[in-house]
Length: 134
Image (tube, rainbow, N blue to C red; front, top):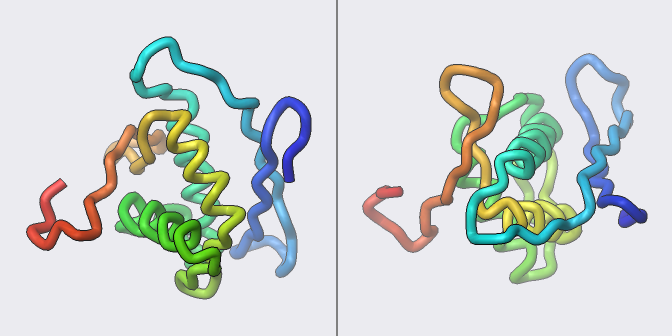
């Protein structure tokens, strides 16, 4: 749902909360970067949104491989207009649009930093790359 001053992405939570509980995450209104640099604040916000999706679909704050799977599921949802199943949840075209727009504004997708709870810029693997190189 869009509102003045930002975009709200609604995420359903698993875990200790009651089933059906929703949390809204507010992201700032789009900004224009002066150059093609990566916006770290937006990468952090994107990482939180990707982590929330991982929590929704797998009850895991950051499912290993999310940095590649989520962008690909978003690509598929946008290309087909059909929700993409992941674990016991799904990536809807609306969620895919919001995450993709945030990634485009950030200049990268996000990956969980291996040593702390922050996110680092990440460029997902090309789905056609059979060698597994990044």
